[in-house]
Length: 108
Image (cartoon, rainbow, N blue to C red; front, side, top):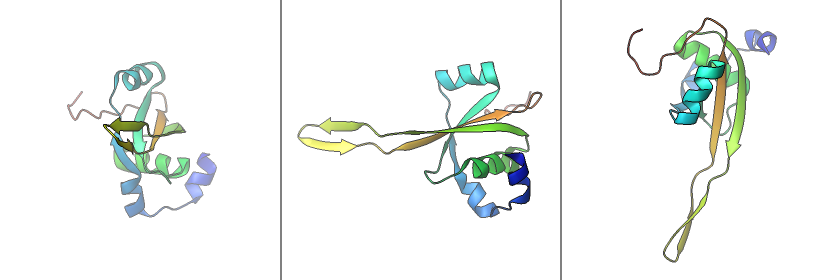
């Protein structure tokens, strides 16, 4: 994965848009503690290579692996009207040992 990524150049403007938001939840915190992985909400068409490059560019950390999953939006009703929530694409970014990513903004 890293051999392909090191040769491929991505548009820096695109990489700044790939990561939509960090996901901070109880599950994401447990995964971060156990496996040194950080969870992000990403664009629907983002690839693993783009996500890896974006995290390395924005946070200056070394990424070991990226796992991506798609979550289908739920159908919701409000009275007679039926709506649907947006689909979400999540990325679990595992950092190399010794690397740390602080999303809270406070210093260590």
